[in-house]
Image 1 (tube, helix red, strand yellow):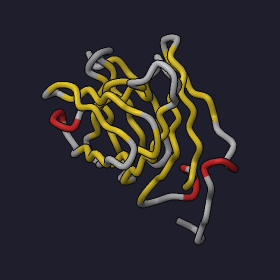
Image 2 (cartoon, helix red, strand yellow):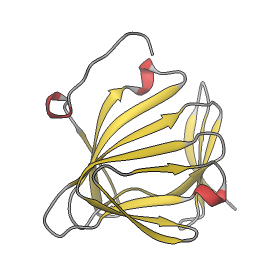
Image 3 (spheres, one colour):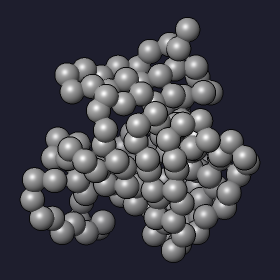
Image 4 (cartoon, one colour):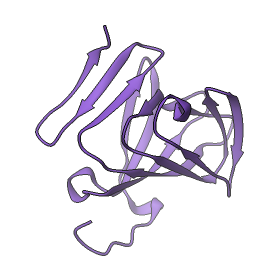
Length: 145
């Protein structure tokens, strides 16, 4: 981080992201360009949606802290229900694969996503057989075959 920051979820402008007709909003606490060891985002997922797709990291661990709502986290061992006040950790490797979806029909799921930042990084997307490679000078998503 380049400076001490205090940010409030309600005052950060969000960026809508989407894939395959699914949408979620990311509000950066520590923007990508300002971090070299950790990244933090508020994430908001509307009913019927999920965030980021099923994936695992080779280098970077993640922690989610649920602020409000109910989430259903898909893992290699099955689904886990999380609620406001819960924290869930994801190790590197296939055993840390995950995706979180909103478990409510009426309430938004809001959580903080804490990420380690190690470069280069390879992120695997088992459902689509793709990998994302991030380095200090490049970034791309590729077919695994």
